[in-house]
Image (cartoon, rainbow, N blue to C red; front, side, top):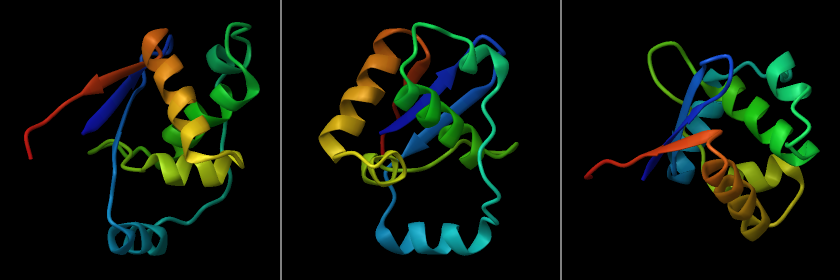
Length: 106
């Protein structure tokens, strides 16, 4: 399943679960320099700190030609929470309209 996000600044993010091999290959390509949280997300009082960090992580993994592809396990590791908690954060962001799920057959 692939997911997408639409925030107030109209950025679109998407992600799907990857195999561990794909994740290792992606990590080799990514020069991680940190994350940046845009003002629309940072100042949104409806978002928890974990939700803000998750949206920033999705943005940092998003490229111009394709969305961000990461699993709940990846998000859990970055947030320092369990996969179950990461799933709850993703579900709330979806429910509140910060993330739009984009499903595909495959």
